[in-house]
Length: 399
Image (cartoon, rainbow, N blue to C red; front, side, top):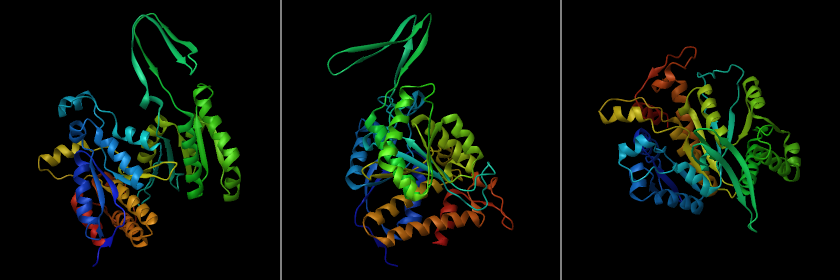
């Protein structure tokens, strides 16, 4: 069989630990036999980020802006323990945070629906897509320890005028945190959300806590409302979908009672937390797609989970692991589909569709990794646990 030839390279961002192992297997077993894979490769493994003083992360993001589509493996964001374990020069920042800041994108995360794995919330019949603002808040915060004394927040405008607000008068020790965001980033976030909702023809709900954070969260609310009224209201009405703003606690209650079929726009931290909650409630963290979309049409696909450290150390000991590779497979298929769409290569997009269907049907036929066995219930089908490589081979048979 002649392999599908690509025109433009994907930006390939390799990662860490068990997901790095799965990354190579997915390419070898599921993609390279069918596609003449063309990538511009960047090693975002923690050792190489340390070796390059994290310049490789910036380079990969700039390459993504150049080529338009990237696929990223899960990576380690180091803490103190990781600095010691890997002998790092410093505690490097989250590569995802660096890439998102450069691309100025919004992260859209959606569960992979499989017949036989029912959501923990019985009313959920359709996917719930989390749209996570990917800039600012605590991910770009300045924080520090405070002793006895007064903490103040000071802003100097372009003319040198100073505005100071008292944060807190400490009588003993404590901590202080200052966050920021920009109107430009919030506007990009809003337009990405409105455009995505229109593309998938789903209602858009946006939530903050502007009753408490009257200026910070209030600014998000006002920008979304202005852009909706001036740029998107007629488009939404024509498409027959709604835009709704409400408080985050109200949306959480509404989401639990809903049947799904919603795009839920969230601020950065809210989206980080709620996407994991949704992924677990739909079945597994390894069963959720994630794509970063920038306002100028740049796409970065990744799995919405970590590097599976525990399985990696089992793998290093020569033990079998049953690590779920589905989200990583869907990162590759998402990127290949988008590359096929942009390069007018329908055969590439069609292959990616077939790979997704083969992956889902493998699970629906009862062959799956260990994390799904306890969740799977389907009449006439008994779930069988496979190790990671055998699961990939089972998918390959259906291709």
